[in-house]
Length: 232
Image (cartoon, rainbow, N blue to C red; front, top):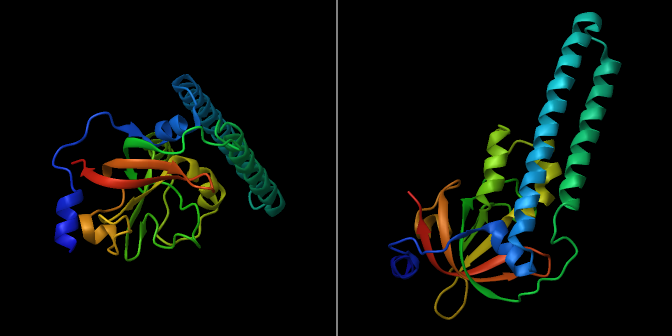
């Protein structure tokens, strides 16, 4: 069964017209390409501001360490300031989402979607313990390549399974850059085989998915896939 489904769903050539996750999401909500470009420009400016703030803050911290090394109260104050800054960045990201609080204008559409398997914080550890896959189900989370590149640019890394305050703060934000891809059999039921086994997939691989897109009641983009191409 696995071999048959793999042969049926695996595409020998990449389908034309692939669009990133966020572009497909915006299309479902009727958001124009100009808004998409404007948001990316705003986010790049925000990241530049955050980097500049971080450099200034580090310089200040170094000077402080030279004069008052070991001052625990000051260090705690700096930690609180950084936490407040992270919270502000998270709130600003939510505010700049043009789909927030809106209803999709397209209920379903045929798509060719491209993205990265995983690559972003898990939006829900409780609901998706095997993120970006699903145990015993042909389901995977595909992230917008632009968002993944932004994450990689800022070199955020930690050990697998390690508790991370940054990821926790941005997990809700990452949901708008993700698509849940569900591979079904010919009767429309989810194939009861892990996508890692079905396609030999690994995290951070670039894929192109063909299928029908919807936005679920929680606002998450979903794709009922009928084809998969793995970029080499």
